[in-house]
Structure formats: C-alpha cells, structure tokens
Length: 193
Ligand SMILES: Cc1cc2nc3c(=O)[nH]c(=O)nc-3n(C[C@H](O)[C@H](O)[C@H](O)COP(=O)(O)O)c2cc1C
Image (cartoon, rainbow, N blue to C red; front, side, top):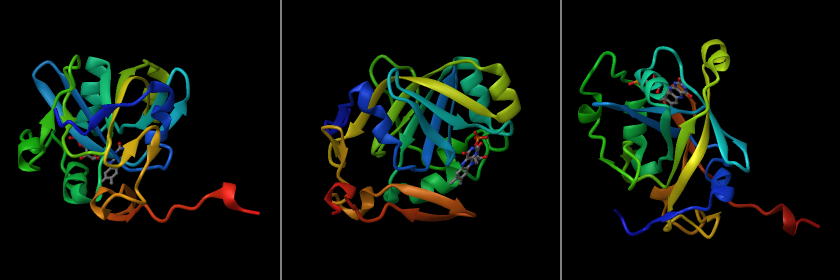
C-alpha cells in the first residue's frame, strides 16, 4: 500500500467529509464490485462515527451495498475529475465492464475485502446500519465508520492541508451537469475581532 496512506482516528473521521466533497462510493458483493460518484454524502455522528449517503434505486452500487452491508466513501481529488464524472455517468447495469472502461485503479485495505480507489485523498470504510424504511422511502443509507484513512500529503494529524498541497489534491464539489468547484481559500473565524 502507498506509504502516504495513514490511519485516521475514528473520532476525527467526520473531518474527512465536513467540507462537503463529492465522493466516490464503492462496494463489493461476492464477485461483483463497483464504484459510483455521490454528491449527497454527509457526516452524521461523531462517536461512533457515522455517515449518510443517498444511493438512488437506479444504481448498481446500491444493490451491492444492500447485499453486502459494507461500502467505502472516498474523497477524490482534482486530478481524478474525469474518473469522477465517468463513474457518475455510466451505470454498471448498462456497462458491466464500467470499471475497466473508466480505468478505475483499485486496491484493498488489509482486513477489508472491498474495492478502494487509488489516488483519493481519504477513505471511510463503512458498515451499513440497515434502515429499510429510510433506504426504500428516501434512498438514504447510513453507515458506521469502522476504519478511516487519509493520504498524509493532504490530511494529517486530524487536519486538511489543502492550502499547502499542490492544486491537484483539491477536493471536488459538484454543482450540476458536470460543473464542479474545487475547494477554495482557507479562512479562520478564530482570527476575527
Ligand atoms: C458528480 C456526481 C454526483 C452524483 N451524486 C449522486 C448521489 O449523491 N446519489 C446518487 O444516487 N447518484 C449520484 N450520482 C449519479 C450516479 O453516480 C450514477 O447514477 C452512476 O452511474 C451510478 O453507477 P452504478 O449504477 O454503476 O452504481 C452522481 C453523479 C455525478 C456525476
């Protein structure tokens, strides 16, 4: 594994999503694995760390999450813009070789038989907390974070360093129709008079 990838304390895992990045959601069930983009992902609880993500019924990834009970939310970067757009535009239901066609580089974290996307800035490995009503009525999936990791070139000691890292590490924030912002300037409310 890339030596820059470091474990993140679970109590700090919420910080990996607090700035509202568009994420990649990955899941695996038996021999099937997949990745999709998601803008509607959010931190939900500090301890135990929980997250929420909206997975539409039209997505293959949702099926794999429902069947396996696990998923990964990962924070992609500006250098992965094309991958994010493609993984969010093609469904594996239509293209069974979606991952190959999108040139999706995958690896695994030790102890988790789940497809993680290489090159991201952070990864939250989540165990689904089954809530059939929310899932069916609102497409809302809740997960408990069981492990979290980040690349220390952009997140270390519980803090993001977007303001120091090269621009290619910036997070992506989808607006609509393939238009995104990258994360902007750091400002500090503690320095206000
Ligand atoms: C930037 C972006 C954000 C997206 N956000 C979501 C989301 O939050 N929830 C969702 O269900 N689909 C979202 N989508 C659409 C899915 O990623 C898309 O339907 C994808 O093709 C599903 O892939 P799958 O069927 O192979 O799982 C988004 C797409 C893009 C490009």
